[in-house]
Length: 301
Image 1 (cartoon, rainbow, N blue to C red):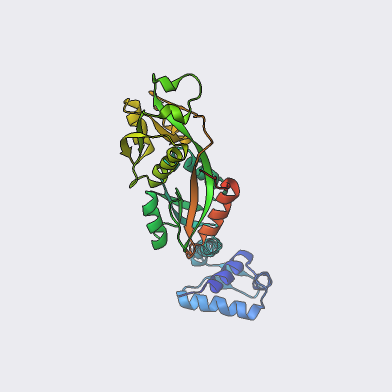
Image 2 (cartoon, rainbow, N blue to C red; image 1 turned 120 degrees about the vertical axis):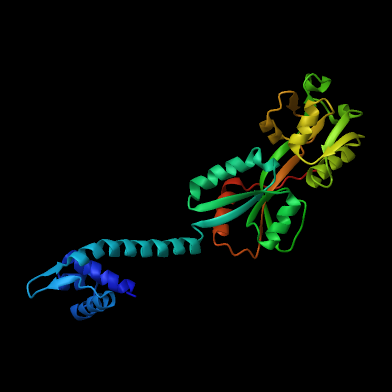
């Protein structure tokens, strides 16, 4: 089978139709150039040039092969360039895990930003609960995650990328839906919908800690895992809830989401990755995202 160097020699002679000029173009002397052409013709068992003392012409077979040789050289160059970009992390495939809540506001912003600056990196999305994302990060089933931080792990690194205020969600028509900004004390005795400690431990602990520190007793009537499930129950008049500000994006017409008078409590999103993940696209993706979105973690009570 012929070699790429032989194709390069053939294309140079085929375009110059002059061995001396072709040799100069390839920064080599004429005898080794002629030898490469003879080896190529021998390998293909086809005469590619008609040579005389005064001229060099392509045979019909040579003319046809010149087009294919150019295509093969372009393909080889593109393949090498692609491999180099992948090795530098400038292109490739990256598996991104995310929580359902992050898709309301933050994830679209992240994807719009990376689509602008990382056009050659294909991102495959995986919606997963935080605990499943952690397992997947350790197993390298995903490369990076957008999640709620409910863990500490020696092989994982995290960086805060979003903060949003916790707000009050009440049914439209409820006394707390209008008037002055309500306080935590006004929630006393209200039927309250909160997050499941199994399926939504981050928000469950956040809300529990908030009421405990404020000394406000709660009357929990439902515990569910997702923000949209909580808003559905609030919309049905089953109770009130505390939800992150991004819940506005779900547009429940029968739910009013408003600020509550208290020391600000923030829900946070983190970017997480395994230290030993060897995907070349990961460091560049991480740098681009953190440069745009990195923020200091909140200090919640």
